[in-house]
Amino acid sequence: QVQLVESGGGLVQPGGSLRLSCVASGSIFSIDAMGWYRQAPGKERELVATITRIGSLNYADSVKGRFTISRDNAKNTVYLQMNSLKPEDTAVYYCNANRYGRPTPDFWGQGTQVTVSS
Image 1: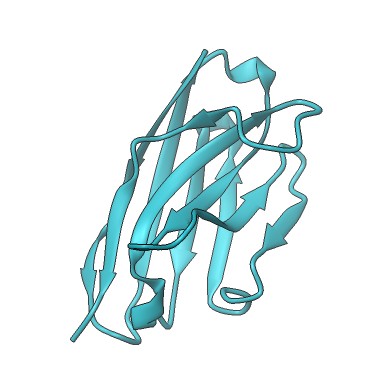
Image 2: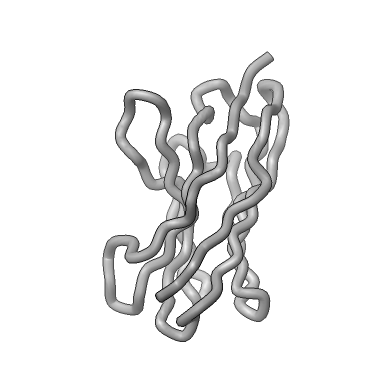
């Protein structure tokens, strides 16, 4: 099993920045991709960004150029730097992890709230 713990959410004004962190523990050796999904009220959970162990990246079109995902394998941590935040970025952000060879997440964090509002 793998445990994921997120931190870094909060309230920010439009145009502001936040940095989310997610620390993984447990059977880390089994994990390839890590990343972030988000779920806004009344909407389905959607992919935000993912990064594989060797650094291959994938972003949702809605966040390209504003969000940056990165990973420190030595610390078992994935980060999401969010800049130029918009009210439509408001959601609960979930860290996720995929086992090798798996196209969809196997493990989820508990979620952290990001609210963009003036």
